Length: 101
Image (cartoon, rainbow, N blue to C red):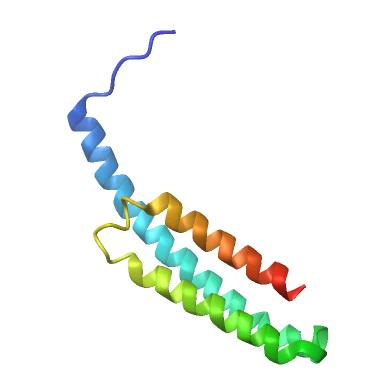
């Protein structure tokens, strides 16, 4: 199968559309993740009462990083570094949960 090249005008309009979608989804993801991360903190009272202060400190640190991620979505360089920023956010969230365990 021979693949035809995508016309440059079509490619640039698609990338512009994709950039808007990436920004919107990144904002939605960071808000939803922050709310869920915060709400699951209520379970810490029963699940980890002996280390409550440490776990809540970890949750607070991760939420601060998520807020920082949310704020970077308005920066012009966000789209250029979209993949690395998104991967970093997911790694931070995962490492935060792993640290709590």
